[in-house]
Amino acid sequence: QMPAVPAGLDSKEGKGGKGRVELTVLSYIPGARVVQHIDRILVCMIREVIRINEDGNLSTWTSRLLLEGQAMCRAQAAAMGGNAVLHYNVEQMIVNNHKMRVYSVLMVTGDVVKVQLE
Image 1: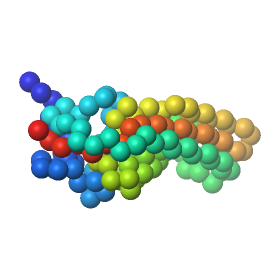
Image 2: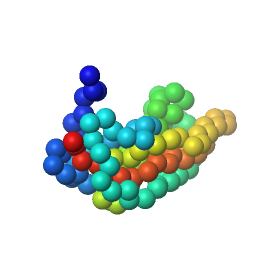
Image 3: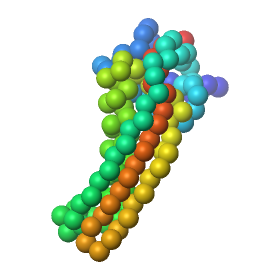
Image 4: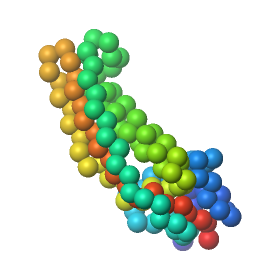
């Protein structure tokens, strides 16, 4: 039995920036076919904050960083006209807690594509 098809994909054609952009580490999305390879993306984020201004601990900071990286990746893919990012990968993530400051670097990559349900 095939896995469930992501809810954000239209059954006739990709929605581009109108629907949810799916992120996957796979080279395909189950139940869909790639109709257009758009381009490869690289999203880089560099952050520095004074720790007393941030809520939560270092785990919370790291989770927020990853979620913002995913959101930026989805936004970039939608702006390029894609509705999925294949081969999604966190290339580099550095979080350095030094005294009262937190420094972080995040680099994510993927292939922006337009997919259509079969």
